[in-house]
Image 1 (cartoon, rainbow, N blue to C red):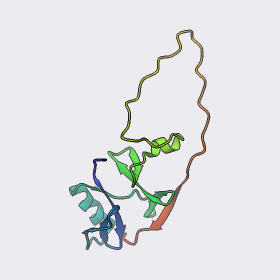
Image 2 (image 1 turned 30 degrees about the vertical axis):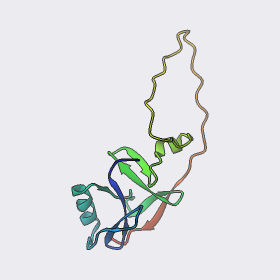
Image 3 (image 1 turned 45 degrees about the vertical axis):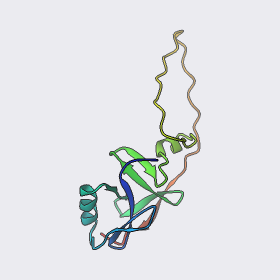
Length: 127
């Protein structure tokens, strides 16, 4: 089970739990009210661009946790997605540092993988 803030979706002027679709709070008229409410409660809003459109990956909203960790509703870490790695089962293992080759040889560069594209979702009806 993953722990962390509740991921929510915005529908009109209300916040709903993204997994259960239960109403969390309504009557939030502006984006600032939404963000203020989220800042004072243990919830996270979908990431939006400057035009107010939410980021989506394969039709799922994208959330930002701790300022730099992006993930989807099901907890899929986007850094792993963009590196082309398969989803993890049961948590994130610790990274093991790799020593530089002792013979002075250059390491082979990794090959580029196709990258899934983030697409803007429907614009939020609040401003």
